[in-house]
Amino acid sequence: MKLVVAIIKPFKLDDVREALAEVGVQGVTVTEVKGFGRQKGHTELYRGAEYVVDFLPKIKLEVAVVDDQLDRVIEAIQASARTGKIGDGKIFVSTLEQVIRIRTGELDHDAL
Ligand SMILES: Nc1ncnc2c1ncn2[C@@H]1O[C@H](COP(=O)(O)OP(=O)(O)OP(=O)(O)O)[C@@H](O)[C@H]1O
Ligand SMILES: [Mg+2]
Image (cartoon, helix red, strand yellow):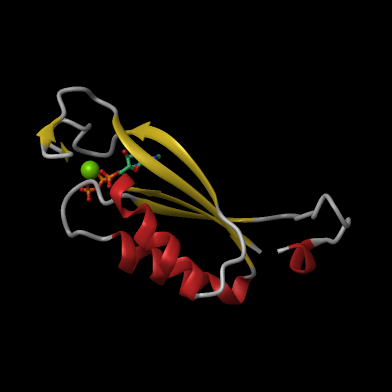
């Protein structure tokens, strides 16, 4: 299993959610975050205005997937979150050791 963490532009959240649903994702966690990339937030536009602060509002998505879903999930996020401009975000993938559904005690693949 893999944990996919994606940082995206906030206005792309609906598009990404739809794209993830289309590839069969069963659950997603969404958090409002702030961050900066290699431009350090300085030249990036947010809602039409140039931000003069270092940290820009972003959305963090966390999606746990089985290994054979991974490529489709990455492609879905990349295609739906991309504008082609700086600040489109990043996708981080790491190995996920264990998943437990609290209600039933189901584990791993059965819990996703
Ligand atoms: N190395 C990193 N570690 C953790 N978070 C990061 C990292 N790089 C980017 N992020 C997060 O992703 C957000 C968007 O980054 P961004 O897309 O600007 O990356 P970039 O490397 O500057 O690429 P680009 O040149 O396309 O803007 C940042 O605001 C930050 O929240
Ligand atoms: Mg950047």
